[in-house]
Length: 263
Image 1: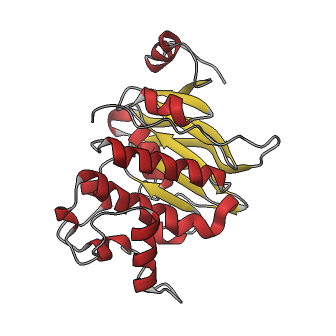
Image 2: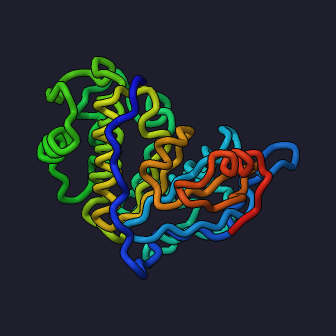
């Protein structure tokens, strides 16, 4: 990916900012009696960016899938602003409250043989009052998708611009809710160039600046340090530590291996 993108500092967090995303006791069973998620408690306040760090395979993917409505057997509770959101609620029912960017854009975010325009409105068609052409134009413009032609196939775009399609769709859906919405971003800059990473980081910062709660899951510790107000570390399906972004790397590494328990 080359040099890291220009630094984007998280916006100042307002004193007394209210919780927007509240996860309580989230648990998810796996095979052979193993818990994929175990009693995860997490709050993200309005305007806050909370990073999720950890060795891959320690529950990060399951956390994102549960928030996206793809793990209906999850237990515990999920609230977004004043709304209780059942884990079994279909993705369409939570789109106005939760924008989700999955870690694998090809598997979970795009239909590569479909057009750019079709990808930008996946799941939106049929919404009352929805203006397809205006929405496509706005998402291309606001998220700097290049080339700008909606008729191109998504497969013809660079990896960075493919990722912008996914970010644009998720973030634009919840922008109207502002401080009443949450943005979940998993590996948002994986496999993209420096320019695209900078644009994506700016979009994440702008979402927090607009009052959204942002949960940022990344294997790139530098990315988490640059963007997060605080970092939660996951190990074995649990949050085992909550640390400031400037915490010593050795301490973060120890927590990733499950060696620290801190609220």
